[in-house]
Amino acid sequence: MIRARDIADGAVGTMDLARITANVHRRNRRTSLRADDLLVVLIGRIGETAVAGPEHHDWNVARSVAVVRFTLAGLNHGIHIWIRWWLGTPSARDLLRVGSAGAEHATLPLADLKQLPVSVPPRHLRERILHTMDLAQRKAALNMKIADRATELADAHFGRFAKGHTRGDVHRSATTVADVGQVIVGSPQAGALDGGQALAWASPREVLNNRTVHLDRTAGITWARGDAACAPGTLLVAPRPGEVRTVAVTLPVVPGRGMLAVRTGSEADRMWLLHELRARSEELVVTAQGEQARAMSRKAFSKFPLSWPPEDVRERFARVAAPLHGRALAALRENRVLQELVVSEMTEQPTNKR
Image (cartoon, rainbow, N blue to C red; front, side, top):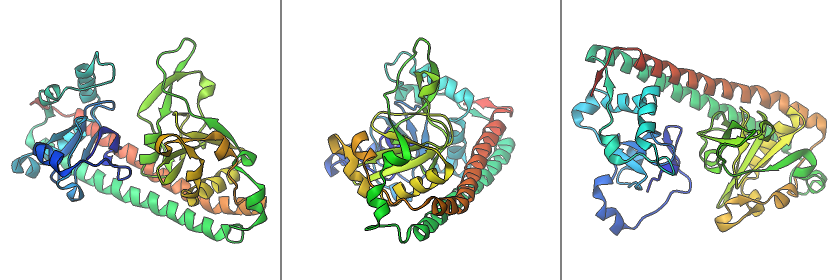
């Protein structure tokens, strides 16, 4: 069963999915999924979308997610693609916020979603824009592969550099996380604060579901003093049963409750620590705590022993890894530009309300 929390950055996360019984599924056949169904978040990050793929056939959804099913004609004319992109435009977001006003937690009633007007241009313009969308989506998919391969190459190089500095080596027993970085505890999301400012806030779920090793945006904000934000390059560490995920942030961000942030003094240290923590994800589970190990223990994590080779080894690795991470980041930045291009194309054309 797909919940609102499982939908992030236009995709359905594959980790830690909920399960329902066959009887519950049979009682909710209307929301039994088919390929190309549009999933829309109704609670929290309202308007966030994903498209069900063949792998989601006959799955179901929670009440926090709406299922928009299209006719064969709608699919043939690309209406499903149009609506998905349109829900990300500023005008659509404004309408969604109006529909959710007054709720303790942002909530969009299903009836309001059904009545939401959609701006649709004349067919000849729509087909041209859909062609642009198709090109953008294909380029974005290629960019994601580039980012993934660049990270895999960096991981492979790390394995080569780490050889000889693994289990049984004196460096591992002598060096801990606290020796090489400043460990910071995450904080809960907060509302308006006197003397504070709105800052990007990263939830553990965003870290766990992030599709790459780089977190370049967040859905949430929190109010805090400016010095509460961790600088770009900080590592965020979040647990779930059986795994601990580590990402590097590319923007100032306040880490959420349940996870930790680690600041290092140099790029060489940051690069080595990032890949060391990634390589030892399963071992790091022992540093998690709480119900189903969903929070990080600062004390246990700080004492976690590392494989930490001499400085010249770490620097040589950074000279190889940093350009690979730079290439991955360039691909992600291009995807943001492509997204903005499509939204601009959609909003600057004459449209009809439907």
